Image (cartoon, rainbow, N blue to C red; front, side, top):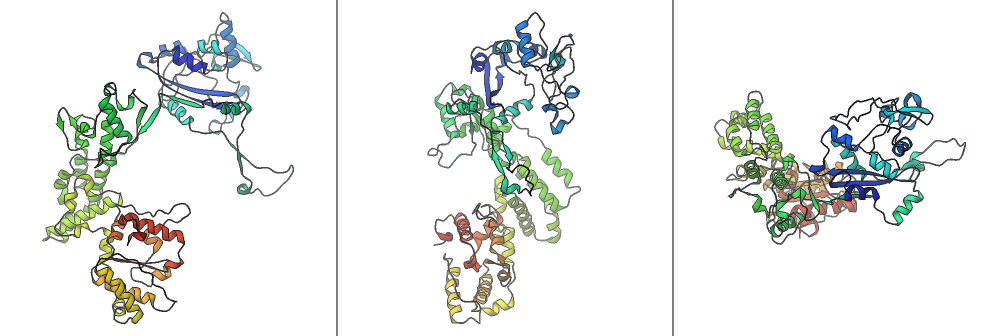
Length: 587
């Protein structure tokens, strides 16, 4: 492209650090390019005086005949507004009654910068005007241009100074917007009928001969220089030496290449430029690792990032604080201190969890010690002489709030709170509810009144439950032969052993016949549209996942009436939760 060569190689406007351009085709078929230039610091246009050296928005005087002819031919907008209210630029729905490009522009004696749009270019009221499309137009109608480029190429060539981020974002998105399309339908002339948009919908685009040739010969439709690759950020692996990722290869490059050691991760010139993936502050150590990668030059390893001025830190957060990439303030402490004066304990616990996740305090343990009394105040009143139970219930409630957001106390260095002498704190809300579920008397009666076939099935299944042996059983029999009676007996026996049983059924009516019964879709969060996905909505770190893993027996009544995809979805879920490759996660 001759224009790109003039700008990038011949440096007519200074040294270019990076550029992106996009080629599209106008409705009449001719190619048309958007080009964004990012200049090196020594060539940047920093003030209105610099803008005037490269951009003009006035009709040239008669003394420069060739440039004047080019401006009047290619760079005059309109007329529109009251001169031609039917012009295309007047039909934009957001600016109805006004030109969407805001022409005619107001006169301006000098170029000035703005905060939220392109600069206001110098448009003096010099008296220069020309008849364009039947109307006398002056400097108010001139589209900004570069005199040298316009005179050289003699075509429409709009040049603007991108002084705000809006213009930059627009052009980067333009690369991926795709082709212009139109929706249409076909009907006979004069035909009047009810239009079925679904049935008659067609989607198509116009491909001109020029666009076809452009693609046949493989000409570029866009280019970004220098090329950029997305650098994914991950925490160290246990077997770091054997696993190779773009991040580990970046460390290796910095270790062996002295030139790379003088570059920053985002501006590394030794290979493709790297752009760091966005990471939310709620992700903890991974967020601080990204922060370090964006500011520490040429790190050679994960360990290297944790060392500052010869001192090795245990977390990336401490490293970032030492480098003053984040501020160590007391805002979280002040927030909790203010809240304890007006909030009840339940609200304080929810606030504490929210601050852990979204504010990433440096020392959560000290906050726990300082505000434990306020966090546990309601339980202290309920159990005034049992400090152990108060602590258990407080920690359990915090863990439940964190589970709902996909986190745990261990994520914030508070895992020691969930490691008491007994296992009560390891129970999630769902597990606690399952263990506290009552056993109806009629179910206990079922255990002693089984017939021989039911007793055989009962003994076989309970043998696996009591011995903690894996197994899968299919109970078959015509309606009315006592399958539900058997399930009730199993429910009572498992519950009396202090174990967890999850009774489910394919239909709600069948599920209602078993204590604590739920439909299979409800219990295991099966997808509603199995044609799209077979993945159940059960995160591995969730309370429901812990419940399924803790279950000693799962009953699925009327399983044979379920769709094949439902069974496959449940199979995938159980395999994932049990880390097993066998069917339903059992042998």
